Amino acid sequence: NKATDDDKKSSEKSTKEGTTNSQQQNGSKPQTENKEPHDKTRRTKEDDDEVDDDVDHDGEDDKDDEDNDDDLPHVKCQYLWEFLHHILLQKQNKYLVWKNQAKGVFRLIDHNGLARLWGKQKNRKNMTYEKLSRALRYYYSKNILRKVPGQRLTYKFVHNLNGKKYPL
Image 1 (tube, rainbow, N blue to C red):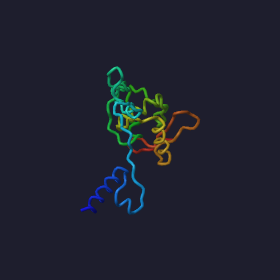
Image 2 (image 1 turned 30 degrees about the horizontal axis):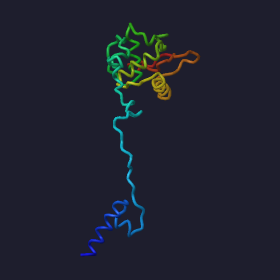
Image 3 (image 1 turned 30 degrees about the vertical axis):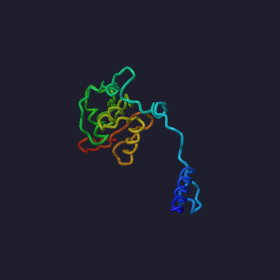
Image 4 (image 1 turned 60 degrees about the vertical axis):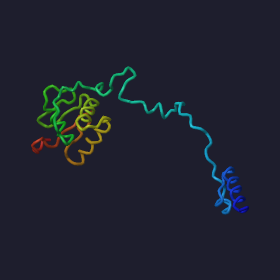
């Protein structure tokens, strides 16, 4: 009976010290718990970052604030070059203009607006002209588009929508 009382006292003592019987026998160090209480009333930088980005401080939604000034019909195009062709076919567009339609040469008027419109078409909220221009450069190697040398933001289609080659 006395042996069990000694074991209980020993285990109580080791619990107070933060060790267990197995740790005492192994010689391992006691594990200490973090005694700092977490203050849930204190605001942190992370809490501030979790503010809803879709609502302004004035309570209005930002979703509709972008550019709803594109009065062009929503054309279902899978590829950027098709999209550019369809935009050029619209009489009232403020993004692209034909420089020489017979040869397939066009110029970007509002390159940032065009990128936003392409992003809206593809459901890519953060589309920029830098990303769109990367796709245009990709088309050079695929023989879909060519850059018109010496003219900024001016490109030439190699083929029309029917697949017929434009004259050089």
